[in-house]
Length: 172
Image (cartoon, rainbow, N blue to C red; front, top):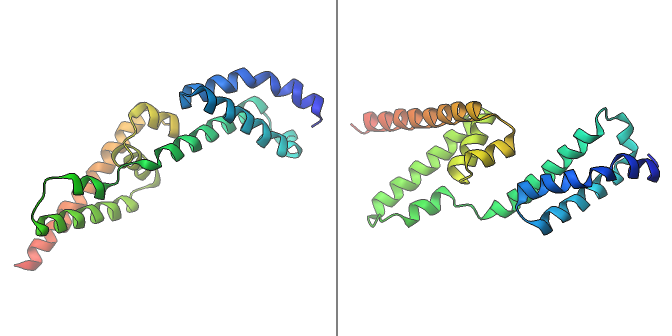
């Protein structure tokens, strides 16, 4: 792709890319930076662009993914399950140990969930994203999101109850 073709085909999309970035990042400077990063990334892969059927869809996807990466970096300050436990008013060391053990079990069970359920449960219950943000990140529709969140939570709950029941039966 030549510079002229690049300008004609892709630079005309800059406003659409900016508004997509702005809607996702809610920050004008971050949105402008993202658009610049997109054009740099696209320019660096100019040799491969001829193989792409829909350049506009591709560049919008690149923009979306860069925005999601920025959002994830901002969300690195998310509250972990362990931090939630330490903030609770549990003064008994035995209870604290039990709660930590329960959290570790929940994390292990979460890792065994199907990938999409695991992602949805993690985004909602661990990182604290709301439904709209999860939809933006994953591209799932609201019904699919709710069903898989419910199934994931139910599986975690059932497995923990089963494990606790087994532990109780062994200690008798």
